[in-house]
Length: 135
Ligand SMILES: C[S@@+](CC[C@H](N)C(=O)[O-])C[C@H]1O[C@@H](n2cnc3c(N)ncnc32)[C@H](O)[C@@H]1O
Image (cartoon, rainbow, N blue to C red; front, side):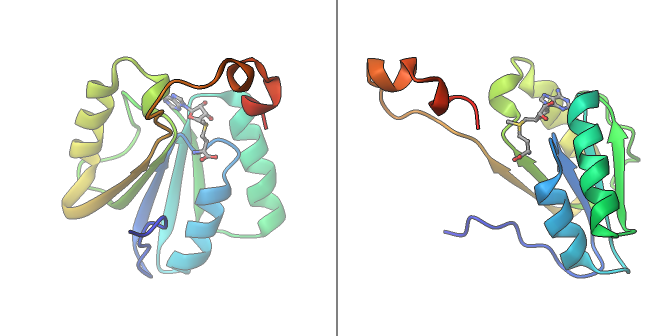
């Protein structure tokens, strides 16, 4: 099992719920100048952090867009590979997000999703420790 999305050179990548943009920056480096990364988040503060990181990186093939994952400002089948790292658990209406992914990812394209899932209840002390919840 790989923990890394496969990012082909020249591809158009979507980073959905990009946060501060680390995954988007790595992907932008991998697709090269023939490809591009569209990074989407609905949080202005997180996008501002991503904008700062993008500016510091000097990468010109990374676009940041402020939008809700349920209504993406992306054309039908525009995306070759979508990366979704840590947003499904935050969204009760995740069915709508899957529908948008099905619309924007081209036929034969791929979606890589990562999510934290508890396989058993957390011990009370782990649950109570703030450092376990905020980086
Ligand atoms: C747990 S963070 C993960 C950030 C990033 N993917 C990473 O791995 O570092 C979740 C991010 O998804 C964004 N998010 C959550 N629900 C969203 C939605 N419905 N539409 C757009 N962004 C969303 C949040 O604003 C936050 O920046």
